[in-house]
Image (tube, rainbow, N blue to C red; front, side, top):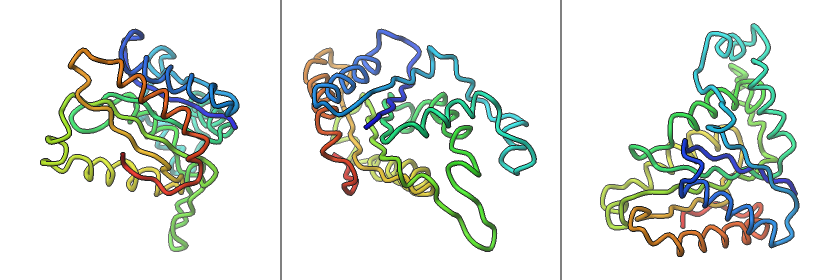
Length: 203
């Protein structure tokens, strides 16, 4: 089993990075194969959807080289874990731009016109780990959990056929007590191989 952990945060000393590394440690502790960190900020991925991306979307040109490299990275993976801080009740622009460009027509799905959409990522288990500053009461009162589920799980991954196996929110990350969050991240990694191909559930 090969897992790609894609994370988006500009500070390499951030809690987001620490959580991603702890998830990787958990996967390795479980003896669940290899792990690759895709640190989008450090790697300098360009999230801008440009003219050449549009040409590739319409099948008038091949995808740009950086997109092809990311697609090849995911082709080697059995599981994808996204680790990100929640900005304005969504994922950061860098991570969204990575999805906009990489999960392209012809690779993640085929827009077959009258034949409908052909989903092409059924081989890829997806795990979502968001870090939020608000408390659980706020998330429930405002309906943010369901909003993010619709936006990310249904709007992105279901469209491509990639099953969201688990979706976890680590909340109240600004309290200064990060030890429980890091322990939870470690457990996410340990449980990841056991959760493969199970129905996704927001926890």
